[in-house]
Length: 335
Image (cartoon, rainbow, N blue to C red):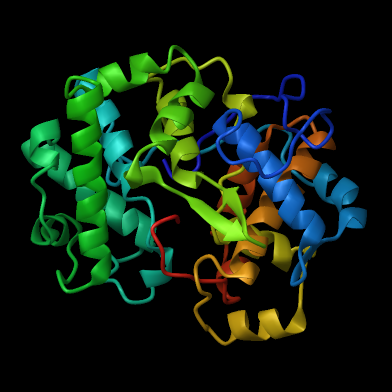
């Protein structure tokens, strides 16, 4: 569920680097994907510590898979049974807490599981044993509840962040959608962009940084949630191809390792030494933004949508080659 499958791209949506009439970095103007594209293109053009090697784009695009295919969902880490309400609840709740990668070296991982899949497996077990939380129950979650579900130390700051995020989900469901997860999806009116726009207004899915005094929206998890709802057949969204790449720390790592992103040597040294990057720092924003923009360029040079390319690169990053090299880490609630 971390990376959804995708569909071949359609005509270029407004906001694509090849499309005209784009006003960069105007937070609040246009859809979530359009705002993300505009802001990331602007950051990439001004970046000082990260650069896209545009000469590598064409060859790298040729090496991408012809179609983006993901293996079936693992039933030990993803809840895929139950009625539609319960399954949508799982997707929304999981993506509401789909962050914390900066804490992965410290968490108690399940044998053979990454940090993400450790958390997903705990949530799956909770849904199977007790069913989904109601919207009202979500508003009452405490730090200890999330620690018990995920098998972590309640003193880990991530646990309160998870609880706060799920409380926010519950509040929005109650006040805006009658407490119903299905009603939330129906409110998107068949649009992945529409669902990402709805979720972007929630604190649980907030993801806007600042660069040179201007807002830079990323909305990684709001867009992933829309794509995951589509992937799992819980909706038939007509416009998933309009979503951008999902700006985290793994895809920039893959692109850096493969020579598509160039990093300032001082930044590379910090990453290789395992130093945490400050969330919202210029370097961290540039890494995320340049990865999004690089995938836009790759999409323009291939038959794949940005979501498809993102999924392919995220899967590539699970291999030994990429795991053997330190990746950029930052502790935040965005990714």
